[in-house]
Image 1 (tube, rainbow, N blue to C red):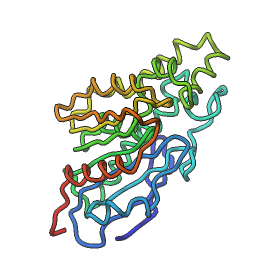
Image 2 (image 1 turned 180 degrees about the vertical axis):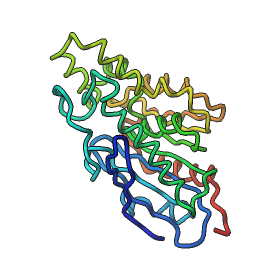
Image 3 (image 1 turned 45 degrees about the vertical axis):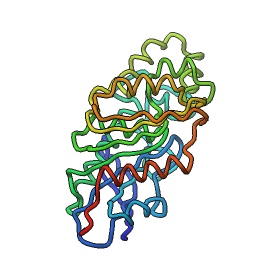
Image 4 (image 1 turned 90 degrees about the vertical axis):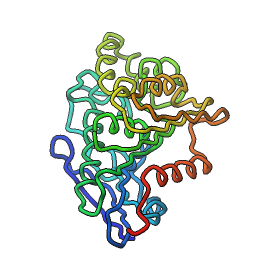
Amino acid sequence: MEASRLWFTGLGGARISGWYVRPDRRGPFPGVVHYHGYTERGARPLEMYTLAAQGIAVLSMDCRGQDGDSPDIPPLDGGHQAGWLTRGLTDPHHYYYRYVFTDAVRAIDALVSREEVDQGRIGVTGASQGGGLALAAAGLSDRVSFVWADVPFLCDYRRAVELAPEPPYTEVAAFLRRHPNLQELAFQTLAYFDCANHAHRVACPATVTVGLLDPVCPPSTIFGTFGRLAAVDKELVVLPYHRHEITYEIQERRFTALLDRLRPSVSS
């Protein structure tokens, strides 16, 4: 396999960082874009080798300002709660996830720009924030042929803020305690970046997992989003005893599903 650092141009001209791992032989290869969880960083080569070893080209992306190497969004007027969920919350044009959603789509464009990647076999995946970004990207890009989203964040914000006892949705509640006059404006902004509102655009095959004991992403927010997916071929994997976690068994099932759906060529 070959592993490379990469950069691509995100919204506003920012230099978005990531990694790219591909089989060390001739393509064309299916491709997968992997998105990471909140406050974390994109997958590094050792985490990407398992798919690449099976004949899949894999690209990861560092979300802006989080624990990778991508820059944060430009300076904003006014403050925000610690974290990124309330950054630019009062203006959809400058909200943090407007930048990250766009970057997520451009990551797909960067992957398919590689001559060794088969544009007709592209998957997106991730957990928590990464699961939400996978759903958003599948709705905003017509290049995606399969999405696997684990315990997705960024779904049904209003309900999530009301129910979630653990961060990050609590960032919004904390912000609105200090700025109660901004409540409706904040939720109007969030509506543009709610996977529940993008779900009707997700027409490709989709698998979503949900933990019924999840204190971070309340299961009802994921049920509602899944129900709105336009995909005819879709599966909801209900995990009755899981919290906000992805166990080995789920990772193995996701890995197998990506291989089955993207079907790497034996001759590649």
